[in-house]
Image 1 (cartoon, rainbow, N blue to C red):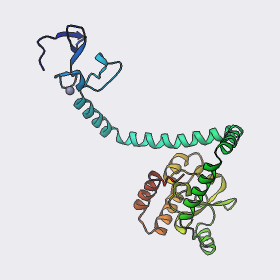
Image 2 (cartoon, protein in one colour; image 1 turned 90 degrees about the vertical axis):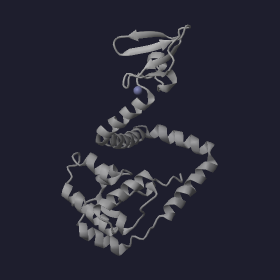
Image 3 (cartoon, rainbow, N blue to C red; image 1 turned 180 degrees about the vertical axis):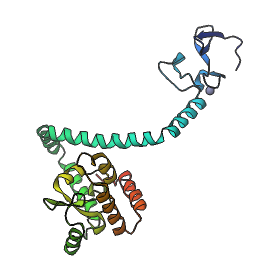
Image 4 (cartoon, rainbow, N blue to C red; image 1 turned 30 degrees about the vertical axis):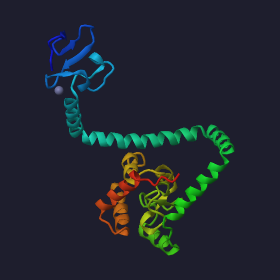
Amino acid sequence: MDLTWLIEKKRGTKSTWYEDEAGHIVAKVCTKCETVKSLDEYPKLKIGIGGRNSRCKPCRSLAQQEYYADNRENYVEYHRKRSSDNIDYRRNWYTANSERVAERNKIWRRNNPNKRVLYKLQRRARIALLPDNFTQKQQVDTLEYFGGCALTGSTENIHWEHAIPLSVGHGGTTRGNMYPMSGRLNNSKWTHNIFEWFTSNKERFNLSQTKFDELIEYLAQANEMTTDEYREYVYWCHRNKKKII
Ligand SMILES: [Zn+2]
């Protein structure tokens, strides 16, 4: 880069930049590779000198990759937790504001009569496409196998839970996706990923890791998978929701 007609400016020991005669910043020294590069070779950053980052594009993307590699676990966990917190938050909000929501829905339905019917049909169609062959006999056998709620052993207020929720658009009402669960857990599990839900709620409900592992083992076997394959499969389903609605 030709610096002949440019004026060198410095701030502190780190920042060096070059201005033209009109006082416009046209180049900077990258604080990482210490090379002089023209301004457009730096990522935009409002608060940076010349409105640009202190590190050039290649240096910055390298730093980001390194950061990501070092913090991969935290990063993944953070996003996992964020999405599950977000679902909880939205759910709580809807519960707390149920009257407002009902009123809003009423207005929406009045204003969108066609869409409303369409959504209903689409939802029904999507759920109808999922397998639905969990027989009475299988229900009895499954309940006998677990002896009650699959996670607590309780025999009161048993609900049939979809391991992969119908709303995800995968799974269905089949032996490989159904297990008995006590009502209060069933309300909490809702549309969460079963693995994430268990991790976040294990302590809250004082749940047994052994019982959970046994349930996963059972579901994996019913789907003719190893437990690792089953886990992969569940995450895949939640990542790849069938978005008909
Ligand atoms: Zn650089």
